[in-house]
Length: 85
Image 1 (cartoon, one colour):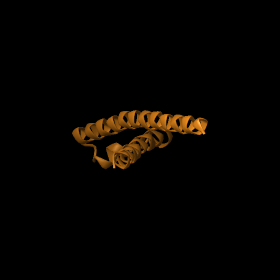
Image 2 (cartoon, helix red, strand yellow; image 1 turned 90 degrees about the vertical axis):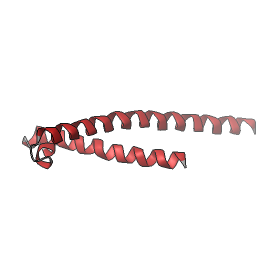
Image 3 (spheres, rainbow, N blue to C red; image 1 turned 180 degrees about the vertical axis):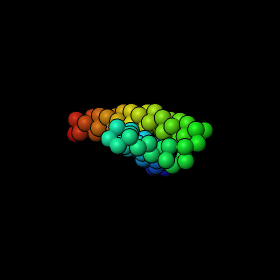
């Protein structure tokens, strides 16, 4: 149960981070700010969206480290069990 919840949060934060990356790509390529467009150029809303995207990126990074670490531990346990045979 805990792992499936972690995976759901990981994908939610990953998609939010991808929207932020898409926004930077649009700014760089076409000088079009998707966040400003969505927020109707209201600075408070725009800043809030930037904060959410930044938070999502940090959480995605942390969850990635957790998944990688748990995956490495899982594989080490498998190798230990195979050596016992």
